[in-house]
Image 1 (cartoon, helix red, strand yellow):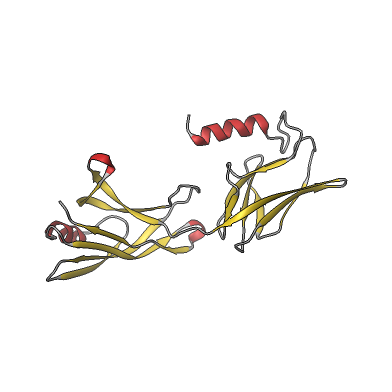
Image 2 (cartoon, helix red, strand yellow):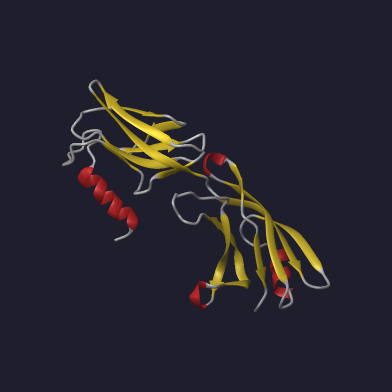
Length: 209
């Protein structure tokens, strides 16, 4: 049973938000078992109103919005500081505290053939994709363009590849690269959530094949 299924079961059994039947009486805020929030990203959190029919929900940092999933909200901190989420009603108030985390640039990895121990083949790759590690958030990116450079002791070839799949020029550069040459993938332009633009971490690899 994977993590998402386990989380869904826990939410089903314990949340009491928007009419769900639950066993817990105390309201709480759950961030997928983490105690930090990424700045300038929509962080999914799960809120239970416990024994109360409804509670006022406020945050000290950024915005918090309700989703179509019962009990699920998205909180987007604006500043890297401790974020307080308050659940309140007349005669009741409780604070939940979360630390700050800064999201690193997405990392780049190869698409296509992989050797033993999940080692990617550069020459036999079909392109690249962007990912976050660790995979805390379910965020997808479109790779718009990258600069591909192949360097050896005598020559340097550079090409702008549009999209995530290698075009004919890049494929030829990879095929003709001498063993020991260095591959540099940089100037990585990405489109992420809400059509916002991001950069990818440059990738450096040596041709050992």
